[in-house]
Length: 282
Image (cartoon, rainbow, N blue to C red; front, side):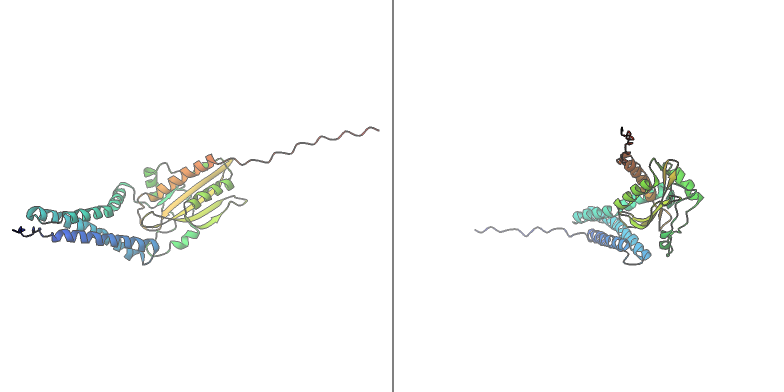
């Protein structure tokens, strides 16, 4: 006699909340990536693009709340959807991890955006001043005494760079480092007599969002060597989350290393004195 099979196993329905949590997480991921591209490449106005980014972060937070609600529902009625909850939480954590770190930096670090090795006479923004006149941009003038005091407390190691090389050599090594970092050079002026002061103005970008931060570097004589002063300032926002201080500190370290490790310039040997010939005997 043929064997009769029982009715197929009836699976529990999938939790609608779990599906919503995953959908919100995926939409948040797409919106976050899209807003980052828009901000980085300037496809739209800065403020609307930034609001889109914050809206995407809000969707990720909402997805987490819906995922917890879905977990509670599954715990009570035994419906399926734990895999969708796991995917949603994985995406949400990936989206919110770095913003959460920046939030900690916001609470920890002082609310300043202009860092310099010389608060008394900081390097000027000359060519860069024309790029800091739009809506919402910080002024080209130095932030002032309050910023200098906050910087001294938070970043006491940021000081002028003194090098035992001539200003022209210091300028060349600094320009190499700026070029290696692929900063956009707006203006460069090598040291020229009589004052022998060199200047470099460039634009750097933050790693993910690509926010523009302006750099001005001044090279000048100092006793038998040279002195390099650096200024890095955010073009937008009153709080730089420590990015400018990190940039200046790294450039200081790399400049000292570059000069210390560079091969000394070989001087041409001095010509040997020629002895006068003795008069011929008659």
